[in-house]
Length: 211
Image: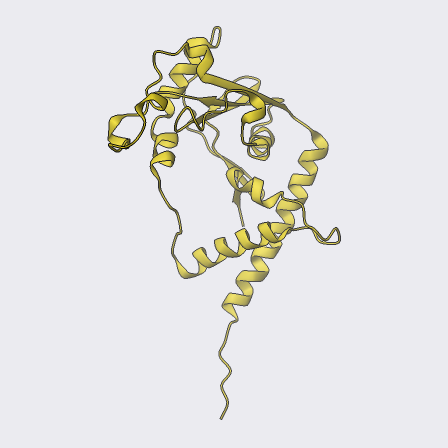
């Protein structure tokens, strides 16, 4: 089984029982993937927040270029797959990976790095795949278009172009770590084995009835 970098946060949660390699969170996620593949369905849910995060990447990259000295970042089109891992980062530079996160509103935008959700394992996966020494997660706050807003949404937390661009990005840097990377690769091997075992159980499932 090949896992996406975006799933690493679930796979890397630590198990309560130290004798086990996978947490219950990781196992539940792997089982869900196996069921989707076995029965041929997807459980993907799309929200307005998710739409903004994916559809407005170019606007966020333009915001970063406006404040990042000397940058001319462009959207990456390359996906890399190695072993059990696959990833498609937003931006690749000569010596780094950059992943863009577009916030829904000022309420959800992390004003400082300590306010941000962690995407550490996702970008560690990217650093491994593309052999880069560092990675940046950049949170961006740009205007939310009216088509995504309802009549009762507060425009004050969605219309932000009047705010200094430097105040509308938050940058978190991660440096490559060989020890953490080996742990990640080990966990991926265990996750793939668990997936195969669960798929085998599904394939061998039978109904036993009495006479």
